[in-house]
Image (cartoon, rainbow, N blue to C red; front, side):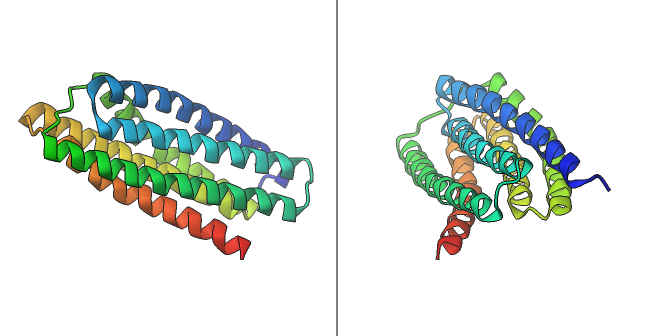
Length: 206
């Protein structure tokens, strides 16, 4: 088993890569969503932005551990991150629900987006691999935050799969409502992740 210093360095490299990917995913997902008029892709891109915040906070936490910061200081950083990310995710859930229902009532149709489908395919493949690595490192470091961050990657994979299903149904079967309905399914993953993060942060503050 690697020593703690090596494990922290490996964890930081993993988080740097993960956060860098999320920056790319955010830019591509949001751009593709705006161009195609797809609330599903827009939500996917916005969730990636929130993952950037979470990843950045965890990098900050790991750097503190690498520099020997007190555990209480590390826990306070995790608490603030949980509260902020949880609140924003819940707000995103409300936004996606409202826009999806509006699109359903007004028969808004999303255009095809090869770029959006490509980034979703890549995420379906990559995210589970990152989640497994973060889980292994988190267990070795006794870091629930790192393990939870890996679960965010699993949620991202579910979301990418939902994006693909919605895009395929819209493209092949011309189901104009598929994008909005798939986005409503996506709300479940976003809200679940947001509520868990919010409760975790709130619980630590009480």
